[in-house]
Image: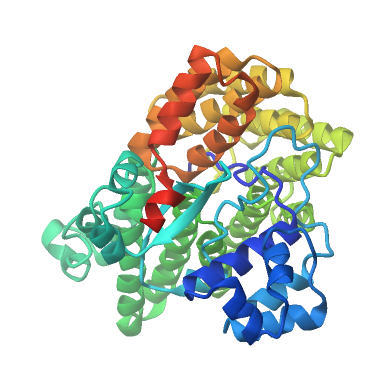
Length: 477
């Protein structure tokens, strides 16, 4: 399994997130400020201040706006979160502008939808970068952003719909022609998808993986005994992998949706290792989403579920270490990561197939992430460099993620020219794989390099990165 780490390090306050969602709901419904204000019985000047996060609405105003926009309670639930600290990230050294909430345009309710649009990074007029979900047909009609979509690995809509292994989905029921049972065929295909993920990126594999889950569900209807059990285990594994693909794409809402389903399915299988692994993945995703409430608690829960001194327990401890760093708990983070480093030799003989990618490089990159979250930029940059040198051949996308994060650390350490040069390499990988995780890190780097924008190396990187983005002005055209 590929490396998985922090994408949502930029801090966006719950109030800014609420205002951003309010604006997107209003504009998506074609309403002006005055029209919405009239419907919700509000002053339109107050409404504008709500959207800009300059003023907090009261409970009654939030409820009326939710009703006027037909948000089904989503907007009001976001308002209820404004008073908590779940959006806070300890020591945010560099960040995307406050109006950027990574995937703010992709509502959690859309995660269960089978209708796939194209998510592309978009530059807003204030300079921040957000992800927008565009309907494929609308994208083709408008003609905007197609260069950006292709550059980030999406290809044409038809290609994205085709999946990465043409014909195999329809042949899953007749795999005897290939000398294997359907279960063996599905296992081999999953391994193939995982192996290709790091080279090709997530976008092309998503459609195929979703189709395989549907095939497995169909096969389960007629299966009995051990075959039915094996198919349920495969369904869980495909669900977890689909969650990872969405996570790498940058769509944490869909990643969370499919990981929750995998966790539910894992209990049906009755395999404690599998359930422990999915629980650890939930801790990792919480870290990616900077959920300071859940990240450590989920990691500790995964450790309690895992066998003592097992590889899975060490994997969960790795995510715990990063969670402590996000909270600003330096000693606890260092203690946890040292525990994992010392345990590497002992877990090497663990027969479990889960977490086999736990190695020195993986631990080092999580140590680097923790150092960056704690504001120790020089140490983080060196640690990322060490992790990149330890990375095995073939981990193309992961190398791009690490380089992008190293570049952010170098910017924090006030080494802009080196940061820009490494950022250019990471951008090349982003264009080849479509990894949203790399794009999110490069958006942080783009913002961090603003003070040095007149330097030739910095100007070259920022111009190249900007050229891969859709722009808000294009969407208005």
